Image (cartoon, rainbow, N blue to C red):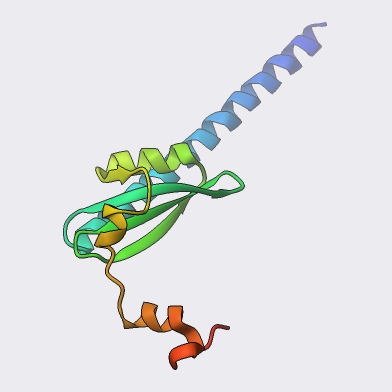
Length: 126
């Protein structure tokens, strides 16, 4: 009976250690995302705004728009991680990617040619 109790205690300890390791790894990924958001903001005018959107299988897209109108995307493992990263980076989150936020996006010749595709002489879509 003592062996069974000892085995149960060891299994519980192993499970707790595994959960702690997973939480630590998730926190590191969130911290890395926050650093990437801060770097984006610094590179694109000193500030940025963002919008979070579920993209499936629990993942969340962080759409970023810099103060200079440049834009980009990051992907987080969960909505909570994306929200935490944005909060750590100190960016303003918008509810939707339309209206004021969309109006701030600046597209260049590359985006216009890709959107137009072969219809107006742009590169063909693969």
